[in-house]
Length: 128
Image 1 (tube, rainbow, N blue to C red):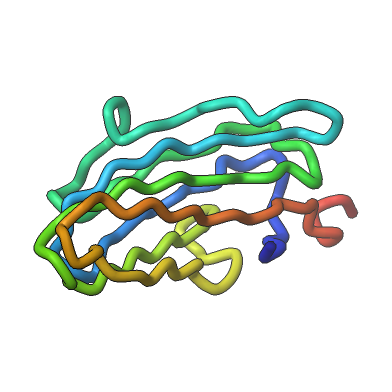
Image 2 (cartoon, rainbow, N blue to C red):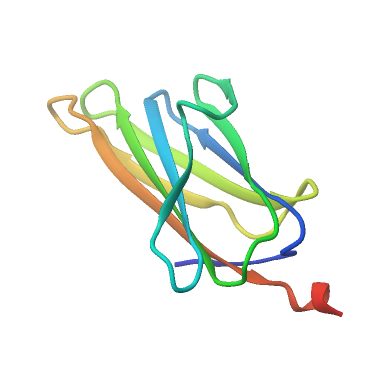
């Protein structure tokens, strides 16, 4: 699971973008240390910027070692490749490389399920 260093007192902006023409939906969950995952965002209730892009934020304070998990459900033409990028940023600056989920719609055009995961840790520079 990729690890991203962040300022726990700033929101983490999450940008989800499909790079291929597919219909997708998502559910985002977070887990703080010692707890179970809890839903905090979905495609039904967060800012759709277009058919292939969503953005939302994880509000502060954010505990170090908070895990993020995003479930995707995609469908489209049979055999079509799928590629979704998940970017995490604070104050307009990326906090690491984008997470990329790639796959292919099955031969019958059935829905494809994919997951992206990351852990957020405190950036030591923010503690000084």
